[in-house]
Length: 171
Image (cartoon, rainbow, N blue to C red; front, top):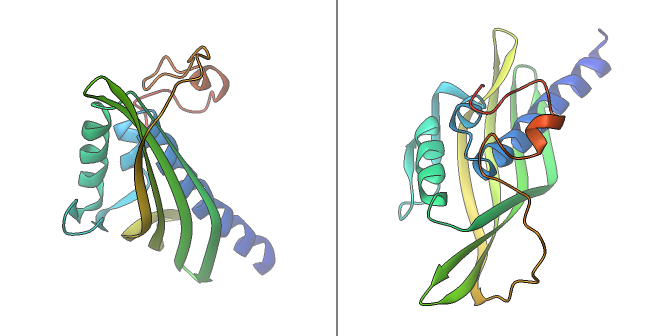
């Protein structure tokens, strides 16, 4: 593979891992979430939420999301600075979460950026450090539109029938 193709392949591998993270936390798929990290990876989601081993933040987020009615994470504006077998990236993220509180449906919105350090070890890219920078957030009352909700936060989500390379709970 020539250098240009390798750069494109490496950047796409990192981009796929960033998207995989969102899929993992939205489907509460802990093993999938663990798979984006190298074993010695560190996460910094702020002192008030989590600082520690990367795989530990997946456990915490999935546990906290169990108390929500729904959640959805999207990433955009992914910039990747590739330097051989190391890379840095910045990704804008918007997360929406819904919960019931006091008989009201609340929607939480978080706008943030993932600042990530990546390494390619034994041919596999993995996350070695993530810092989350929060730009702003909100909580507001929401009114459901009454649409049929077909998403699931487990292996019964319809996407697992279409994305056949991985089953729920497998990295």
